[in-house]
Amino acid sequence: MKSEASLDALPPPPPATWSQRLSYWGYLAVWEGAARTPDRVARHLPERIGRAWFTAANPRQRDQVRRNLRRVVPDASPADLRDLVRAAYVSYARYWLDSFRLHTMDGAAIVRDTPAEGLHHIDAVRDSGRGGLFATGHLGSWDVGAFFTAQRNWGMVVVAEVVEPRPLFERFVRLRQQAGIDVIPLVRGGNMLEQLEARITEQGQLATLLADRDLTRKGPIVEFFGEPCRLPPGTAVLARRTGRDVSIGAFMTQGDGFYGVVYAPIEVAELSVYDGTQRIATELERLIRRFPEQWHVFVRNWLRDREPDHPVVHAWRRGEDWRELARADRRATAPDQEQ
Image (cartoon, rainbow, N blue to C red):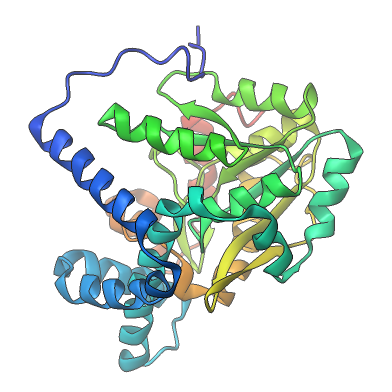
């Protein structure tokens, strides 16, 4: 029996280690410092911090970012790729600064001053009262984007990974709640999908899921930028359960401001979870290619990096059609979801 995935039902956290406490205090110090920084100073910080971060980063991390972005922009020269990796660090610094300063922002001003494309697609979902699905990635300025959606009354509900120390997780949850976003925790054995399904069908909310990184090593292996990659199946599962279309988009940074992007909804409810996940991956590729420097996946993501001995990787390296092996892996991993 699945446990309830709710903030009130979370088990007590384990005692925090000294390392976790130091990490939490460090976050608080940076959080408060960023919030108190004048706007005229804050707008210059991401460039300075991001470049310094790029220079001081662990070489293995920097190399992983390079490898990830090489897949997105395969034709980039070595010099251009290095510039792109540096820009990704700058963009990620901007993401954190925006998150730490979110509670100081004027929501009405963000809506007024932010150009966007395709917002009418989600406005239509909101106005229908039927709820819907929105898939995005680790792109742009996620928390400000959530704040932006609250100003448009999109009724967003999101999933948050439970991290330790628990006070840090709780602070991020409060940040999202203050922005007008409902939060469901991602816990092992929890009924997260059932909770999201009810929010869509019973409350007419917009369930929003990150669809570009699988945390479980159990997601379907689909093609992502030309390679086998496990991606999370949750969006496709919910589409099948609810019959709702899926919109893909993100909230990007642009200069000192922002830029919203929402693509036209895609129909995946009649597809298998495997094929639905592939369809969503293809749309995400289109979005990430437009803003590669704002894609903040700094860890191993593709199958050959995470599971180099997997039969699918061997088939892909040999130039063989690996998709039937990937489908078999999915049927063995999650047979119930594929029915």
